[in-house]
Amino acid sequence: MHPINNTSPFKAFIFKSNLSKIFFGFLVTYLFLSFFFYIIYIMSGIEQSDKLIEYSLYTSFGFNFDAGIKNNNYFIYISYVHQIIALLVSTIFTAAIVLKFFYLPNFFVFKQKCNYLEEDGKLIISLYNSIDMFVTNCKIQIYARVEWLDTEDKSALLNLNDNKPIFEKIYPFMEPYLVTRLVVPIHKCKDLGELLLKRENKTLEFIILVEANASNLGNIHETYKYTIKLSNFNETVDLYPPKSIDLNNKDYKKSKGWENFEK
Image (cartoon, rainbow, N blue to C red):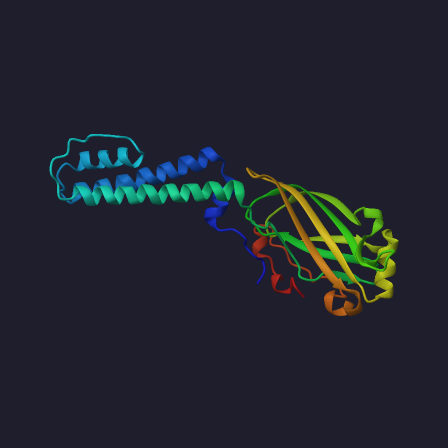
């Protein structure tokens, strides 16, 4: 069901934040948990609770600290609790760093089929940004290639339009959940027009290259491919205009008509 949300609140926080903000956030989380347990220790009447929490804090950060604690039946349990908290928070922090710098979700969701308006000579590709982040300076290029037989009658691929994109455009903004239509005029690529007219037993591919900027993430690069069987054209392409979506300008995610996105 559209719109698809490819990120969770935790991931959105990580992607939107710089490294110092992430570190500060996890440090505050750890200190808050420590303070929470410290209050529990005091309320439960544990002896030397202040020295116990001080010892646990120092050892959690790897410091050698002699708290001068006398025999206390709770010490080993309290120490274990703080070590587990430190391990858990540090593991999540490490995972957040890996998520931030080594893993990026797919920002853009494409309609499963492209639309082809034969009378107008236009190919329409629909997509939207599925991440709760503002994307800017989005450059989109579309290339077309087809199965071909080379000079030795061997199966090969031929890039159409002299290896140049059949569509190229820069979008200044790509807000979350705002549908964008890529309208490709077929007449600008003669070879492509002939292929769509003849509908021979060949496979046509449209390859979309997306390059954009996202806050605190730098450049993002994505690719998407439509594979169209020309001999089975009617089942791999929608031969009518894409359905309209009634925009909710306050929140594009709540726009009416999302149920028709794939129709």
